[in-house]
Image (cartoon, rainbow, N blue to C red; front, side, top):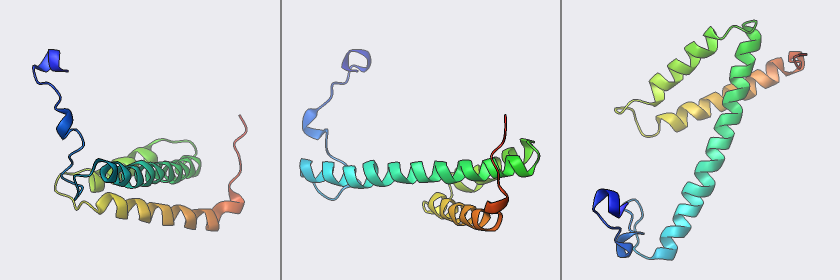
Length: 117
């Protein structure tokens, strides 16, 4: 990067992070590991699982038509991706989505069957 940009990495500042209230390298790594590594990755894995269950259910309910999923996904992004939204909006929307998917599973779970290809 230094050859391309002309700016060399200052290793003394490598671990400094304005989001973490400490300058101790191990503490910064530990905080990043728990909140970004474990917390964020588990949140993504769970969000993706529940999102794919919802989209799969919508596909099946719409007789394999993709428009309901497209409309839902665009609407979800509208409420969660804007610059002026609350920082909690994506987490709240994802939590609502997970509760809804659980409700769908409880209500319709016995009627959901695997597709035969």
